[in-house]
Length: 251
Image (cartoon, rainbow, N blue to C red; front, top):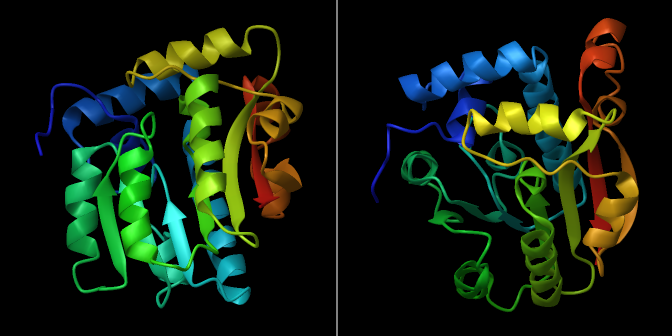
């Protein structure tokens, strides 16, 4: 796998703002510039990671044994593998750095694998998942921190194919950005461009329509999921061009 260290990658930028070390100078520069436009970015990143941890804890308590996580980033900083150590987990990401380090982190865990995958063409990932999970298709699907970087067509195609792959009783967890104000999309994309991505904020109604035939079970702000409504000050929240929501859906 070739690693391009001349361009920032949003997964490594995310790792940096979480306090991780699997990033390059180009990622750290991008993070600094993004925080000039969105000063609360590190707080949103932490809320997103804490939501992953909450989901992992809930899935553990529910006895989940099979997990497919897409756009995983690095399985550090308290990822699903920490909360579901006995589960079969298939992680995936398009970033080769995340894949290489992920493979190293999971090397002593035969029940977990990490694959490189482009979610715009999920067929190779689903083929690997069919081999990895075998006949057990009652799966917990993680799409946390990825849907706001995918356009409508790719998102709909991914989630429909995942629904067809999974058996009844499966569950989906995702997070998404909700625009706040008329200039929100422009503001977000100015920041996203610094990490080489386009950002797609959506309303809860738009997201519910996009994920069909998955059925929304619960959808609320990440701060409400985590009982951290005061984590962002009123001034920080009002100045943010977006809110961040977590959604749980059932097959």
